[in-house]
Amino acid sequence: MNTKKSKSARIGHGLYLGLIVLFLYLPIATLMVLSFNAGKSMNAWQGFSLKWYQEMFQNQEIMEALGNTLSIALWSATIATIIGVLACIGLNTMSEKKRSFFMGLNNIPLLNADIVTGISIMMSFLLFGISLSYGTVLFAHITFCIPYVILSVMPKFKQLQNLTFEAALDLGATPVYAFFRIVLPDIMPGILSGFLLSFTMSVDDFVITHFTRGAGINTLSTLIYSQVKVGIRPTLYALSTVIFLMVLAVLIVTNVLSASGKRDSGGSGSGMGPKKMIAMALILVLGLGFTAKFTLSGGVSAAEDSKGELYIYNFGDYIDPDLVAMFEEETGYTVIMDYFDTNEEMYPVIKNRTAQYDVICASDYMINKMVSEDLLHTIDFRYIPNIEYLQENVRSFVEEFDPGMKHCVPHTWGTYGIIYNTTMVEEAPDSWTDLWDEAWSQQIMMPNSIREGYMIAAKILGYSMNTTDESQLQEMTDLLIRQKPLVYSYANDNARDLMVGESAAMAVITSGDVLYAQEENEDLDFVVPKEGTEVWTDCWAIPAGTTNQEGAQEWINFMLRGDVARMNFEYLTYAIPNTEILDLTDNPILNPSDEILSRCETLKNLGPKADDMYSRYWKIFKSQ
Image (cartoon, rainbow, N blue to C red):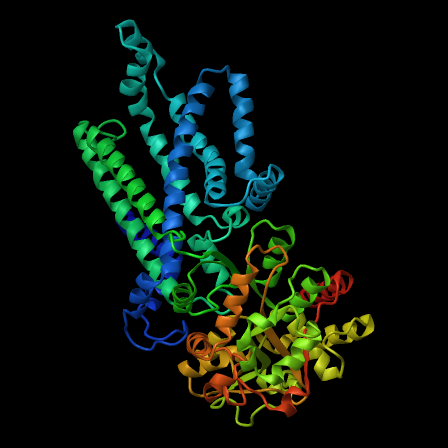
């Protein structure tokens, strides 16, 4: 009877452990499988391929971000470990009361939110006039890693046998010799744990890096975050797979060395034998040397014959990387391109000048806001002859947010509409009200965005999408609340992938994502509803604080060139308003007719009071 219970218990324990492992590693396994998918979508398998790995190793931006990530993590973990161990030595000499007080102070950063730590460190740099750079990121990482080292090492000091140390001194050993021969081997497991914990925290960090990095400094976390606007490319799945396998290899090597150390010490003690200590030291030195060389060789530095550096602030993955190299070769400038995810992330950087940029890419309503605050240079179009290739029908929309088109030049543009699966929807939708049809309950995806969500409701009710009338906003909120039971998901960037995977019958999507989706699923089609929609424009502009207006205008002129627009369109599949590539973009999805455009509106900056009102009603909608 007991045997049966024991066997059942073992089976139960095995199943429980299996579920935990499945919960922890199934997402990683899924990502690894997708890294070998020939297609771009995560919702449809297109066959086995290694092309994303090839593209990853050829992508300079990813390689530089990887180099920055590893070098910052290794240097910060090493320096923090040294400082942390020295701090523990000092704490160990204190009285119990003082030691408890300082350990309490040490625990505060551990409990503090990363965003508070990141902002406070950033403000400290700015207060003392220190420009944000690679060095400020490294300093910030060292600062937040030190408490973790102290937390890991201090318990080992409490376990020390002080009598052994004192006996060594009595026998004639110097304090330094006694420390390295007696104390260090006993606390080494804590030092190693503190180092590995610091390294892991640094590699994984986004928030503190985001607030303390300067122009041109990207880590893997900031690079991935910046690509949300146009969707994360599968090259980053491949990169994540490589990193996971590297970490797994390090853990296996560490465990093998640990087992070897235990055999060396006769199966007793911590297992930190001489072999393991020497091996860990070699790994650390070689790792530091490799990443330092990698970062210095991969970093951006102006050549001797360079005309100087041109700093560009762009949405993540919003340009063909080959165009940067082409521009550098043709003009002699060294381009340093940094990335952001949203206009709201970019705006305070330009307003507060926490980093200096010569060219930015911004959306219509943000251009409108920055023009009103004198944050943008006027553009001297005498130096931009390629402006002649700009499509005329886009100029009218630019006039709405930048009268006279004095401060910006369109980069990409598009509309919002309904993408639908022709095999699931027999009669093509032609109105926003089709998204309220109960026949499609749980088959509808709506945007998880305040202005786009209210745009749809405004068009149905016959209001302007830029209304500031609170009674109209109340009606629009009530309309969206009534629709909620019918909605399968509120999604932005992943809506296209969900449609590719046929998770829903129809979704609200930007026209820029339609060609991508159709490449993966030929049953998808797109329509602009008869009530009208939002037309959006992302533009190049020159911040008022630039010191390289000449280079900025050369960049804008370059991006307007026909062959450049063609390359960029083939990379992005977003509409580029250039008359030289109409053979690629002349279709109703990318280039709507004048009749459709006459029913469109441009998103405008409404001011802080109206923004607060929209946010208040959006919270009411989300809470229902």
